[in-house]
Image 1 (cartoon, rainbow, N blue to C red):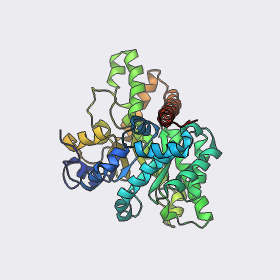
Image 2 (image 1 turned 135 degrees about the vertical axis):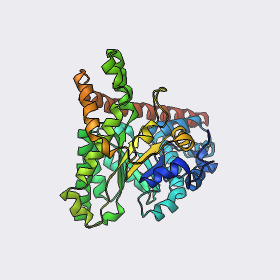
Image 3 (image 1 turned 90 degrees about the vertical axis):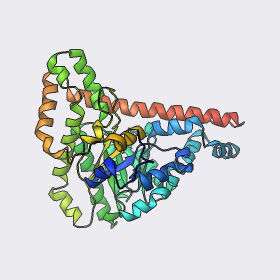
Image 4 (image 1 turned 180 degrees about the vertical axis):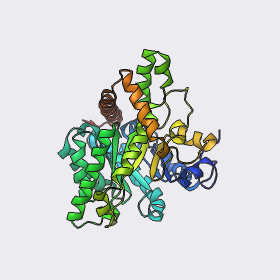
Length: 381
């Protein structure tokens, strides 16, 4: 298999993907990826135009300790708390990545060249604390191309409005349901209206809405397998794509509507759909499934490196694979419902699990950093 560092941004499936209007972002970051030149190479030769992070990604990177030894030593000498240590390390990585991607940001007038960092996942159900954390992260990173990730929980929705209204660009994460996605878009528009009332430049505010894909198939496929009928098994691998395609339909409707049109007249940007969790979980599926089948203009696909490499190696990009499939998407989700699998129950469960997984990863990261600080003779508590 070739890798994206061996490919170029002007050839192959990655170029085709970009030509179809899909921005390719990398769903990973580490100190080693930055200092080794790997990230710069992916940007220069592999067509990567953005980076997303989450608590699990930082837990894997910082938990290993590789590349963080010197900074950990300095933090230990200063006697910082473990929470401060984690924030200093994560924001340092995001700041460095943002500098690498700054030429892309400038060339695309802020559309791409973005690096995302998430608010503390323990704040997912606290609106006021989420807003305060978002402001703090924006200040700590201090780069115009940072995006603050806010989860699409009920408490997250008003936080999105407040943060956008303050002129801070936002990546809304952990979106699973079509209803919640419409609420996210509404929160974004309310934020733009708030920013306009404050006299802010709307053209400088950007946002993406991270709609999770593979986890939907993982949960629904599991339930279909339990049913075991021919009808149930024939629906495996179809729900996630159906869900995402209907999300894009909702995006088209909202951003063609009067409310956004009024904002667009003041140079407001659309909140682009971002396909997240695009690495397949089922080895029976083609490893580029959630790339090839979710090609649509004005979208972002954030890929783990394995999916990025697979797309560079054998991706088959054949035009828009979203906008012509709305009727079939509705039929597929309706067929799942007829079998007794509740869509609302599944997406609600996935949201709860998503928040819990990020909280657990964050706690693992705090524990690992505490251990490192203590090993250097400093109490991390």
